[in-house]
Structure formats: structure tokens, C-alpha cells
Length: 111
Length: 112
Image 1 (cartoon, rainbow over the protein chains, first blue to last red):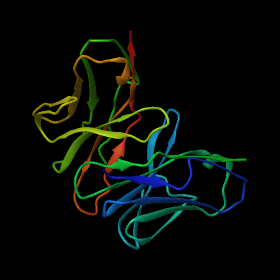
Image 2: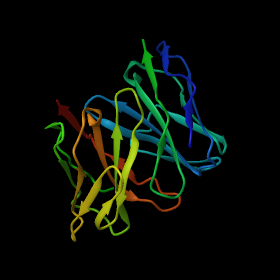
Image 3: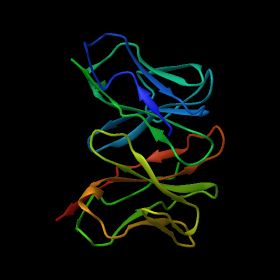
Image 4: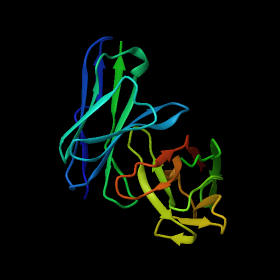
């Protein structure tokens, strides 16, 4: 079974803090994704990586950066957290086929 | 990116067949159609994927007309455990492509 794990299920941070969200997959997938999910807005793609050290902006990259130093790990970074970044963050991975595998999500609250 | 439009919500009784239609008028030649299911507090889970005509697996069927401007997810004989949000995605699955856009989803409520 493919497994995608995220470092925390729940996280509370203060405005202005630097926040790291970690995602690890165990199936040697080339592609990894970071989404945020908000009520009424569905899932929106933040960043995408198709290989180590490679990244592409998604639909809403502002205020975020990413890092992919190893194939299995994809990190989302909030350089200076703001209250409007309070959300559910979902990581996913896939091979060059159709099925994305999602992690359980991290619910981030910025106060 | 092909934009998708789905109903916001649907209700169904247990045991009925449910059809959820997704509109994607500007679908491109290389785009595939994929459906995901999401339960509360979980990440989405793949259900089915197709390019044209009809695809069936153990949990659902996907109907795609010849013009591919819409698709219909069919869930046979739903149960309470099928209560979830269903997302239609349209995009290119090629190497290095991230062209998979989630819409807002359809919240299906199954009533006893």
C-alpha cells in the first residue's frame, strides 16, 4: 500500500512565525503536490514538484515556498504565517499515471 | 486548464443509484477525467478515471459522451457510507504535468 504521511495532524502557530509542513511518501513517486482546502473552495493547488529540486507554482503560491531535496520528501514553508493561511493542508504524490495518493492532512491554525 | 462545474450537493436514499454529472466544456485532447471521494478529516481517495465512452470498476461507473464536454459518475445502490464529497478532475496526466484542477466538489448525503 502506498503511504503518504504528514508531519502533524494539527498545528497552531502565531502570526509571523515560520512554519514547516513535511510530507513523506514511500512509493518512489516522481510527482508530489501541496494543496490547501477551505470550506466552499474545494482543493486548491499551491505547489507541485515533478522531480528532486524541481518545483512549479500552482494556482495559489503566494506566501508559500517549497523544498524537495530528496525524492520521498516534499516540504511546504510558510515564511511568515498569517491568519489567512489558516486552513487544511493536504499533500499528495503520484506516478506518471492518474491516481494521486493523499496524506491525512494538517489542520493549521494561525493566531 | 479545463474548468469543471458540478452540483454543490445531492441527496439520495439508501439503495438508490446516484448519478453526479460534471461539466467540462473546454476539455483538451490530452485531458483525462478522474473522480475522487473525500470523507471528513481525510484526504481524497481515487475512485475512477476515463478518457471516453464508459469505464466500470468495482465501486463505480463513469460515462463520457463522444464530445467529452461532460461526464457522469454513477454509484450503484448507495449506502450510508457513501456519504462524502465527490470531486471531478480534468487534466493532462503526462510526465511533469500538474494540470489536474479540483473543483468545489459535490456533497452527497445518503438518507436512511
